[in-house]
Length: 162
Image (cartoon, rainbow, N blue to C red; front, side, top):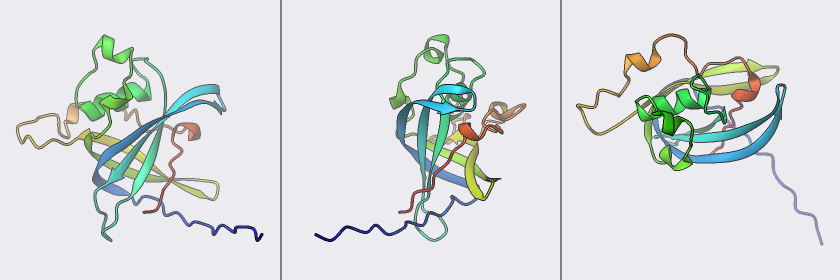
């Protein structure tokens, strides 16, 4: 019997800029060994609406599971939901709260060695309600952007072709 040969898949990095899309999955990756020790990680997968060439792009946004008020996960959830979390919400995390949410998001690129990564640097909720004031609320982005971090382990984005 002949062996099966797999062809190499070429991935394209999500382009920079502002996009709209949908959160299509939240995956628990378990404990991952990082330069800071074992950290419980999740990925939030965002798929863009059709890009310039008519096909969507997707990226995985890696987050450390933490209920700390200043954690990246708390900041991300608040940005997607367009409001502050209650104490009860902050100390529990139902992955379904993010699934199917329509979002606007901004992507930037970062080089590490010979690799190029696409990072979500800003995210906001999108609703059909024109009176919804949470859409692109400047108060959400006041101060430093909690989604921008120089820790490579926090932002490992993988582009998957469609």
